[in-house]
Image (tube, rainbow, N blue to C red; front, top):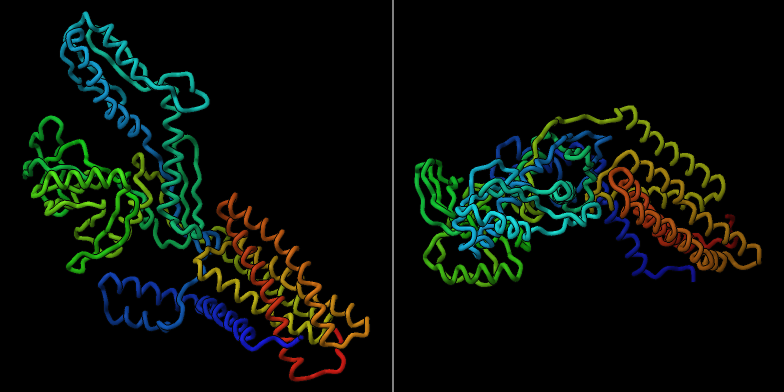
Length: 553
């Protein structure tokens, strides 16, 4: 029967109302944005009459999610950074020294005593006391080399070893440096992307520029400093045993130890074991939390192997302090009160909610393998100018008016129903974009324009099918019912193929291509929904009230 059951009718229009409710804040963009900004500041503990007034600009019981405007529509932050790949080279050689020392100590009778000499960060110099064992030492150290993990240097060793008298010099080979640089840049690109865009809908532009530089553009950010704060922290997290503390910044920490300043107490320095118990690389998760006094903190959880190691350490060192070190600063040095099994804990400090949230993001995204140098930083306005934005809006309006007029002239009252569904369709697209927090760019507007043109396709198929059924002398109710039934498979097939294309564009593309794919994909979903359910429910309601003997489509 043509009539739609009441529960089904309620579900259809409840979906429409919810979608349009989420889309509604975009019609009051400035007001809702001011409301959201005020709430974010109030959540940090700051409040005044002006903030309260701004927060009251939009009712709290209504959704306040907005569609983010892209860099080409709104502007944002523009940064050019250089990755200090030399840091990774130095870190590798620093970690390689214990292996060199241990392998030479296995033949102390031949090579004698071993001592590390001061040298540049890009090389490791080792002195042996017995010059006669230099050749043997050279062979032992060279044997520590590993094949380069790259296609171009697979046959080469990752280290070069030279001998000059009783001094061995170890450096990275050219093939290993090239492979290490490539890995570092790719890892940095991924970590920057995770830090800036955890959800995947913010649409930053993150591109490699040359060998060691990365271009970062983030839409909708008021200042480049916001992104610098997020990217400027390396986020190297370690958990180190504490050997002591001092107020002397020039104090000698001793062999195997290091002197690290306290972040909480100015002028206080901790003497820590250089080798950490666990590191941030072992973290499985980190998120905003609050300590027992209600102050912002960061809770964390280690993976299985690190949890076991951390649990054993706490069991053996009850009553002793250990330090949580972030980027060469002790942010907390609690005393171990009891055995901590399970590998979870909490990082406390003088954090604000925003600082604790950012730290959790940094730890989840992972530590940068090398320091970033900001070569260029600026906050930019819309790339294509207000004229292009206005042109996009005009394109949407013209396309919509043309479709509305065409449908009414072609299908009369049924065309009017299709037009109502089309308007609802556009609203639902913005509702979905608001829910997921997607970013709208000029290509995204093009996707909406394309959706407007495609949205009536399903209705056209249905209406033409109803015309065919009316020619077979069936009653109007039966003709409408058969029109929808026989057109359904064609509608589904046509839209599935386009939706698959949108998914591929979103998966394989980035930036503007991804923005186009998002709006196109959402447009296909809402178009099918409005054509199959909304238009049919409008026709059903009209038919139930008018009871026409004949209809014209």
